[in-house]
Length: 252
Image (cartoon, rainbow, N blue to C red):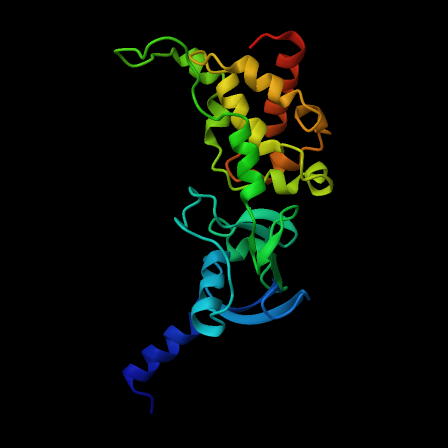
């Protein structure tokens, strides 16, 4: 005869939300081999958890050599951008249940940047392009004694592009960037847009000239990959078109 304690344990077991999910991860360790291999891991996980949680389980419990970037785990820092089931996503915002967990979940590094190890890529070319567009307020004259005020209407002009978290999901989804790493890429143009259209800024002409280069804004082919990939929902293709229009009209 079953005891009340055993009955409770059996019911809790039957109601367990955990399922077994296969993570298929692209592995690369230059200290061991130049070869790239795919490795499968079986993980017990609640489907309401995130891909990042699954990667943590693998690293902490199954293979401590697995290497990937993550920091805030809340979609703010942008450090855990990777290709999940063939699409650029943030691992910390991608739920297992939204990926058809009955099939293997493939995880690989973002494209267009040199892979250093496993899911970690060299972000320096990406950040250099960001620095090159001068992503800071440029003004002339003496510093003001009070805050530089701005109307809600003026702020709205560039509000969308302030949302960028520099995750590189947009730039590494761009086929032009895949084929030519010299292209500034969507993220750099988005961050230039944020200041070009800021009514307080006086460096718009300088940024436009930088983006008028052969590796600048004219390389965009309007495929909308960047807009689709952005985890913050920025209308990136629209912003790029606005920069192109500003170059033609010199009105911003």
